[in-house]
Length: 386
Image (cartoon, rainbow, N blue to C red):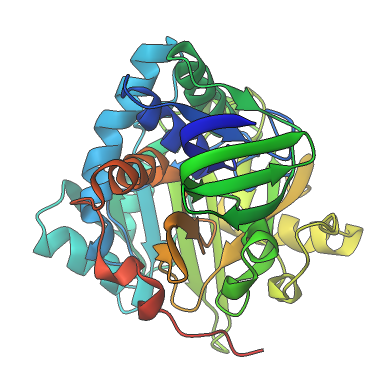
């Protein structure tokens, strides 16, 4: 049996960053365990890029995490000597009275976050790649940008291993057994004994911690890439990451998001048909886009960015855990406070992953963290209606 001060179960988005933060404390024995390969291509973080935003439409509870994450991303870049965050800006586009746009504007103005407000005319002049509606506005988060998630996760793994933290991949945890001394972590490759456990397994949380299954569910997330006719207009130097909400005359809302080219020939456009919000099992492979759905995506993205060829060049489907109020859950199990967990990330975790990892590390070592908010508690969440 291997002994550790802290065992982190799950080494993806949040777990990798938690391991990195914990490993920097030389007096701790830290172990990481993950059921999948080091780079899990079906994970919540996979897919080449993620949006980084500091003008967070989900509300001010995330402001501290936005500020902390910028510095932490730069620290990880320095530790790995790899580019991870390109601060090309993050642009929100939509009608000024649309809820997400109102909230974003309220947050940037109330907290004096670096930003620009653009009219539809100014938006088109600055970014002629877009085709805004006449009443649209743009809110440019000048500190936002694009993240490279696979690079970031593996960089955090390497940083943790360099500090002496062993990581066990392709190792599935089957049981957590409380003892007087701590928690026994039973895996298909042996048993570990830990004083504390941090569970960061995303979509699989309800399987290992069934007491949380009424609070989170798994939903698919689709990603597509489209090819511009002029790729030079979609380089990070001239094209930001973006989110757009469009309201049709009949009231139908279309939401999509995107990132500049990182592969040199295409840009990411994330949008997917409504039926895909249906819950699923994390062990099931999400269904791929059908030809009809890809045709629908092509029509939508061409409306958003006219220079795009209206036929996606590639696509992938992932999944994540969703809670009741779009706020993630970071808490301890009521039955045993030696078990911390993170879940309910809503496909929005990656931008703040290093800050979330720092928060969990502080909670494990110090018992609390200045980054934690009551909104993250399980008590602040309702059970999901099924």
